Image (cartoon, rainbow, N blue to C red; front, side, top):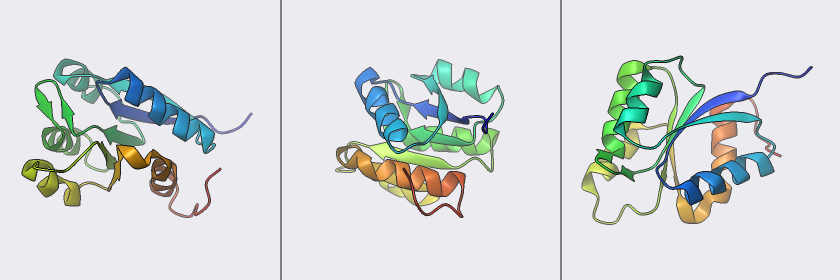
Length: 130
């Protein structure tokens, strides 16, 4: 029996984007068990539980900004890497200020870059994905 799948938390309100992210990770051979938070209530519930190996975060959810998600995750799980998966930074100074404090960021229009970033954060010695 192989290693257990990596526990990831995906903070994403779009079903379509969540599915695309899952497809990219699976396609790259990343074995992940993905829990999902779609709003403040489900994020706070997730933060009360066991920490995942990594958090992937959208920049904007209903009533919740990605910068706030980063702050909440850092407060609850100081050492858990956080990666932003964003549609655009245009005009969002709050997000632009938060991204340097995250462990990485990927544009949703360039999702094929996400698995390599995730793999490097889950296992810094792993330089090859897939």
